[in-house]
Length: 630
Image (cartoon, rainbow, N blue to C red; front, side):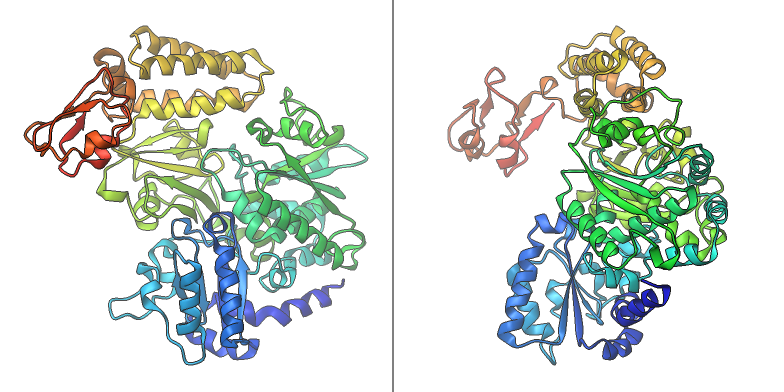
């Protein structure tokens, strides 16, 4: 393929993509040139697929045949980001945003909206997309999206995820063409350096420096690698990029191969991401067919190819040296550093490793320039960051915001706030390697350095929101359970340390904690941080230490008062029936699996503590709020 052929493909599909990107008035004009009266975009990402979005597509296709609709295009995209409302379906050029779709809803939309002369089915629209007068709010003005700035996610939910033609029309491979026709390797690296891009996988190491180290390393062969082993609980940023725009990663890796002198690359992705794996393989096959991977790319004489390697789901393989071992077919265990991968990586050759989100930022930097990228964000944290927002928040999903956006903006303006008007208590960033951000820091500007300063970290971008009903000791125990289970066991400080920390936290939540346990936790944590072989063990104590620092009173309440202030730790709770509230309806007794509740109709009931298993079924079924736990 030549650069001219690449541009021809882009031109052929440009109007289709433009309809999805621009405001309604212009889109209506462009729609006339696409050959389609309307375009229906349905999310085909993991979240919506698990909510049966494929059945929605099947019903649309069936309805189109029955209604003889042949001028509406159905597009299966990647993630739109607003996962709480899936399956999502958007109709262009109107921009009608349908949420929580079912096959029956799809049939209704086809019959009432998608037929010629049809009208938007307003009762099925996402509420935040409709004005009081019933008119549709432009996509960019929806509260969830208007505070975002999408760079890594720019094509997710916009293009057909399995179409290289649409990817090209949306701008993919344009940066590669620029690099191979008008830039030298040193110029490419200089642009990445000047942009201030830092690794989005956790540590935030300057990306340009890593590229420079790999280029300068001596070796007859070099490799480029994509770390897509996303293992943090609640994290799905990388998966969504691979599912929605896999070509942006292939393009960036090829650019990096040219810059550092590599001709071969590996994408290490966990096998639990079947949709991402399938679309990666489709994308690689398409790119090879068009000559965008392989020999003599775009007639430049540069050769580069990419292979997919599947991980078995070991969290430790997110660490670079463990990942390298797994790629080579060995047990995924970390090795001491130095040497670093840039000097000795895959098959002991110089290897450049970046994560998915980092790769997704490369092409925009090349096309728009380092000054543009470095103008976004904060002084030391440039560009945007993708967060997978979950937990006690209304708009669970994927957001991308400029570095420095406050936590409050993410939770309330984008996330819609806490369900049931509960109070915000804390947010956990960085997953099992990070720490908690208490409510007093809700106005903190989210960037690498600010989070480290308060005992947390950016990590890969998982952001778990917690409300007033969350027990911070229990949350710390949850993350310790994860890291203890995921420790590879190679080094003693991590293998034994995580177990001892978990045992101590379990002891505290079971009501058996002692004052000296707090010092014991700190002592174990200190040894783990200083002696563990890799970042898994070194950072495993972080959630515990962070919670102890900001919520020390909760730890003391568990130990000294044998109480869980949040009412979560079962061993420290007892259930009571308030006699003045109980109406004797018997619902609690009838639904108690342990037969722990006694009483007669229309008289106050009682709970036998010796039989109560603290399952909460009584509270769930009581209509009079008569049952409390203390």
